Length: 308
Image (cartoon, rainbow, N blue to C red; front, side, top):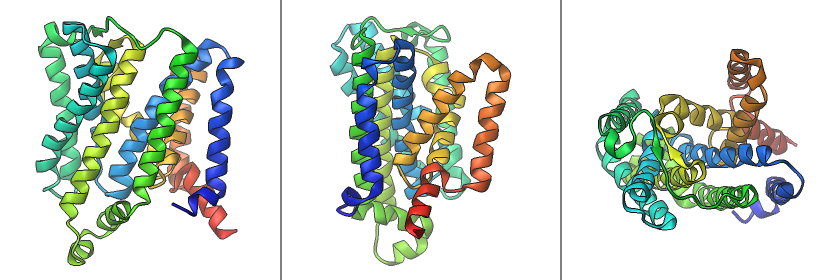
C-alpha cells in the first residue's frame, strides 16, 4: 500500500475525486442524479470484484445481497417508521447474515455450482418479493416514506463520499495479506491449501465483506430513489450490469470496477435517445473490451504503466 500513495494511479484517483466533488456547483441536477446512481453501482461492482477478481468465485447473484439490504431497510422504514440511518445499518447487517448463510453451503461446492447457487438465491428472493406483496410491495414496488435528503447536491456528495471510502477500504483489503491469500486461492486453491492457508475461511470473509458493502449500498440507493422494486435492486439484469461493470473496468483492480460502472450507467443514459440501439452499442463496447482488453480499462492502463 505504501507504493500506491506514490503511484500515478493514486494521484489520478485523487484528482478525479476532487474534480468530482466540485460538480454540484456547475452541472445540472439531471447529471448529478445520474452520477449518484452510478456511484452506488460502482460500490456494487467493487464488492463483486473482491469476490470474483481475488477469490476466484463467480457470483452470478450480486443482487441477492443488494436486494436483501435494500428491502430490509425499506420494509423497516415503511412498516415501522424507523430512522433512515437505523434502517440503512440494519439493511447492511441483514445482507451480511444472508451472505453468511448463503456462503456456508455455496463455498463447499466447486466450479460452476457456486455461481448457480447464488443465481438460485436471486430467483428465490424475487419470488419472495412477489409472494409476500403485502410486506414488500410486490411487482408494483415498495414505497419508502422517508429519504436521506431531497437536495440533489447533498445526495451526490453522500454517494461520492460513500464510494470513495468504500474504494479505499476494499482496495486496501485487496492489497493486504488477506487479499494476497484470496488471490492465491483463486488462482490455485490446491497449492494455497497445501501452504497451510484456510481457503474456505478466507473466501467466507471475502463474501461477508462483499455482502456488507453490497447491502449498505443497496439500502442507501433505495433511500435515494424513495422506492424499492425488483427491477431496480433484485432483477438478474441489474446483476449482469454489475458484473459487466467490473469486467469493463478491470478484474482484480477494484478501482476499475467503479470506473466501469460509471461508464456503463452514463453511456447507457446518454444513448437512450437511440432506443433499443443503446443496449446494442453498450453491449458491443463491452464485448470489444473483453475480447481485446481482457484486463479492462484500468487493467490495460496499469499494464502500460508497468511496462514503461
